[in-house]
Length: 226
Image 1 (cartoon, rainbow, N blue to C red):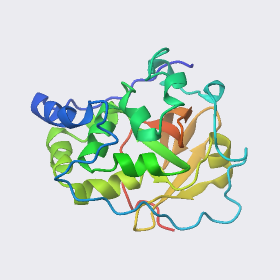
Image 2 (image 1 turned 90 degrees about the vertical axis):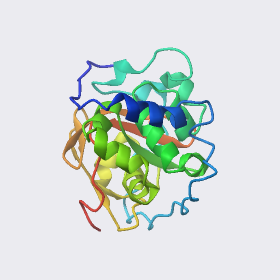
Image 3 (image 1 turned 60 degrees about the vertical axis):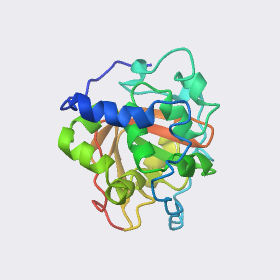
């Protein structure tokens, strides 16, 4: 694990946090859709461009591949540790990670937990709590109440193919599950990678069905079109 780099954010009000945490912190929060939320559309993606296969193969990583300035904030033991997350599908794994409580609340509000967990091989760019805090309390609370707006944002953070960092760097840009054809541009270096120009804080985090890249900003759908 490398040196930590804090990401500044604007604090969410207690009411917003409690309202979202109530639906995002139980053992089944990221895997059990709300009965009142609309069923999410299937997560589909256009085929990955030719030549964009992960450079190191199938994009599956191990604990030894995890690196980045925020990685040392991940627990070293238990279900939320790197070793603990390997055994669980991505939404369940995220629910045990203390860096991603706001993301889990957002995924639960959008009723996407089961959808993410059922994907065979994906890449997830996971905004940390500070990234969601930076949206501001009112904006985050409004999104959490409107799955039609929240779902496209979350899908823009998911790539329908599994990549490790080498594969992402080789690809240069990758298509997301955003219905508007949003692309993510990968830059920087292998020691300081970026997505859409923003730093990746912890990369190559393995889960059962996804490789996770923790980021410090909520990305905007449609920023880069195919």
